[in-house]
Every structure is written in structure tokens, then in C-alpha cells.
Length: 133
Image (cartoon, rainbow, N blue to C red; front, side, top):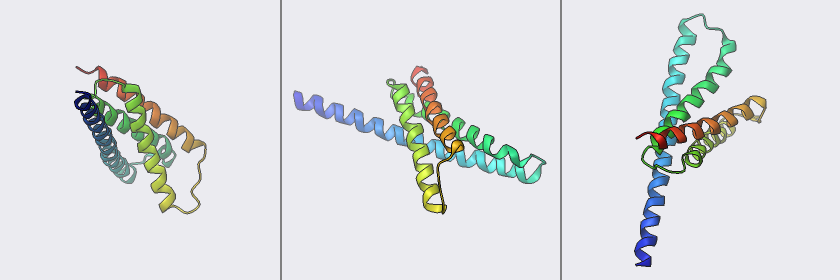
């Protein structure tokens, strides 16, 4: 009986990990779509280039919020933790990719703000997702 319970717990944990990765993938897809739309807007309108940094932070936060909400709907517990993990892993992957692609990559104030917003957006999205019926 003990082995059955342990196997059930392992299956639940593995299922939660899969849902967390689905949330990260959803967040990446949304980010790509929204950044594409924003790039079109920059190209074909007179939007000032000074809006790029804040809009990227907003796009990232919204994408993580939606991805973590969708992913935690079926988990139904630990929304803050699971959402924070989604935001943290998402932004970590972004910075790992950036450091590999970009020479002279360094963390700055804008990067710290983006990390904080990513984790907070994930946490809020996790709470929203858990509380959707």
C-alpha cells in the first residue's frame, strides 16, 4: 500500500512539472507573438524608440502572467510557488540565451527590474490560475 501511495505522489509531481513547463512554453510563444506585433508597430508607426524597454518588460510580464495562470488552473494548489517557478525559469532561460548570444552580457538595473517583474507576474498568475474554477 505504501508503494502505491509513493507512486501516486511521484505521478502527481511529474504531472505538475509537465504543467509548469507547458506554462513556460505558453509564455515564450505569447512573448514571441507580442514582440512581433510590437516590432510591426515600431516599423510602421511613429512610436518613439524610448518605449522599447518598458514595453518589453510589460510584454514579458503579461506573457508570464497568462502562461502561469493557464498552467496552474489544473494544479489547483501552491499557485504562488508554481507561478514563481514559471516566472523564474522563464527569465533564467532568457538570460542564459542572452549571455550565449550576446558578447559582453551583464546584469544591470533594467535586468534586475525585469527579473523581479517576471517572478511577481508568475506569482500573480499562479494565484489567479489556482483560483479559477
